[in-house]
Image 1 (spheres, rainbow, N blue to C red):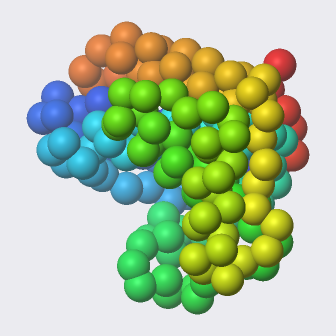
Image 2 (image 1 turned 180 degrees about the vertical axis):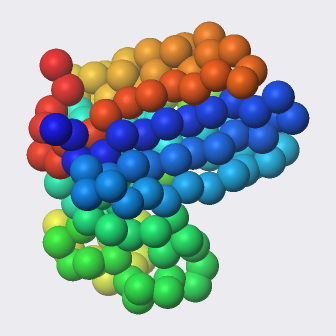
Length: 169
């Protein structure tokens, strides 16, 4: 049984509803409207690609599976900062969003330099270091998910499952 069932629904009014059902029967959901909705759909799919490619247990989806509500990720952090053992999924997904928005694909060296700079600026240790092959796998997984999402008709949903620590095939 997966830790989380992720359901993203395209509403006829242009909004997107994301619902996350945990294996204990609880759920959290959020509705996004306007251009922000489409950005967050792509961002959430990028998270999925990052976390399943790297086999993360405590990235965004892992924390939701543990019981975090989607509002817990907003500003200000109602739960305080991310747990010390949370994986850097948010940073990696954010850097990939920046890269996608710029239209230029960074080399692993450039990507890792951006991650290191972020860690340095925030007084954090051990920034993630990804090689070209892993970055390629994440980008391809994210691209494939965005293609699947684009094909979902209005009123329909894209459903994914997430199991903490499990890597995608």
